[in-house]
Length: 157
Image 1 (cartoon, helix red, strand yellow):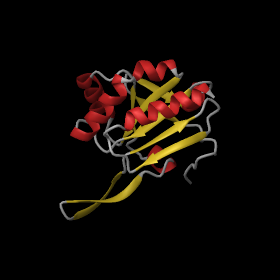
Image 2 (cartoon, helix red, strand yellow):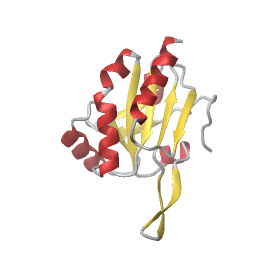
Image 3 (tube, one colour):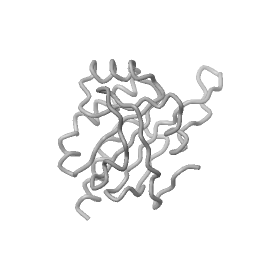
Image 4 (cartoon, helix red, strand yellow):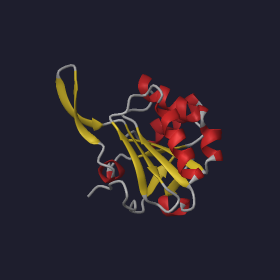
């Protein structure tokens, strides 16, 4: 089962950086950006995370929480967050529960070999917990700004 735009996102609790757990229902009343990235500390994922980090103040002003998610373990997520100075939580989804919920595991090719991996994707959830927008097959350049503008427009009503 995966969530589609216009539908409520099922509640979830996930292990996050800072020795915390993030529960979606605890964020009700705020908008939430959930972005999935393939692997911590790789060039594209570092750039994407930095783009969200650099816009966090504007996301805060739009009453929007940012959550980054990958299949990396919590130690890799902690190191990635610390090294890059990310000012938002990173979630470890080793069991792929959130990856399945948002249907981001896809067959990918690397050097002629096929493997299952995360397709870079972002989701915008409104203050009532409903999925309002999704971006799949994301190209990093300009993406965080586009998501910010969508969050600002949603917040403005």
